Length: 102
Image (tube, rainbow, N blue to C red):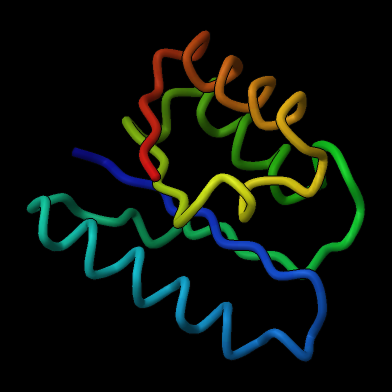
């Protein structure tokens, strides 16, 4: 299983949270016996709402079928845009034939 991971924080002050997300994602993927594709580890520091540049980069890679599943720690780490943007991201992943997990 080719896996991408996505982690997001809002400010540089939250860097320890990013480190924690990274470790949580690594352990989860390892427990499932999957392999994180090193070139598909998406991390960003962003406060804006909606689809951000790093999130868009991940979605385009999904559309090119560069991985099979993307793993997020929790929905709030995907986007600050609320439920509408979260559903839009998940819909794009599903349309690309890429699975997702929290």
